[in-house]
Amino acid sequence: RDPALGMPLVDAFLAVIHPEDLEHVSAQHAKASQQRSTSQYDFRIIRPDGAIRWIEARLVTSFDEAGNPVRMVGTSQDISERKQIEMALQESEAQLAAAQARAKIGSWRRDLTTNEAEWSAEMYRLFNRDPALKPPAFIDFVHLVHPADRKPFTQHYNRYIREGGSYQIDFRVPQANGDTMWIEARSETLCDSHGKPIQLSGTAQDITARKQ
Image (cartoon, rainbow, N blue to C red):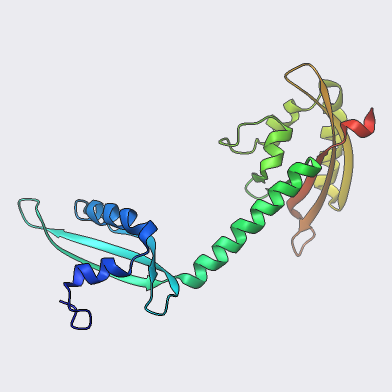
């Protein structure tokens, strides 16, 4: 029992959990009691002064020879500051996504050492690509470009890779309905200490109305 509250420790623990997280905590606790790996989950508590804090819990369950759970140990860590940063970033990303959608402009980045790329949500919309998929490799991206623009686009890109700096190029992208969208692409190069390009980052904007 908790001597301060005069109630069992489990009840005292549940009493401070945020009402919206009670079901989540109960489910995670039940799940942790049945698995042999470490269980981790986050939840909120309400302190006596009314302050809300975020807690990260880690639980490990021990089992007897028959496979029955016999003991559970764990840790709880206050991660409120980290959560505040995460939520601020999420809000910022949501605002950026909304702004990009309004302007019909997407942003992207490609690591030239791994050829891995990152696309914003608007990039996926502009190029009609499933957001569940990874951004395409350059050789696959070229096939999204209008056939008549692929050669100059590839030449421009290759020169940019060799020489670095920045570039701007316009090209067309065929649409599923038969229309053609014009894209204005801008990019900057990040080089290592030897002047070798190691990263590209840029934007792609729908400028179809401007071209008409």
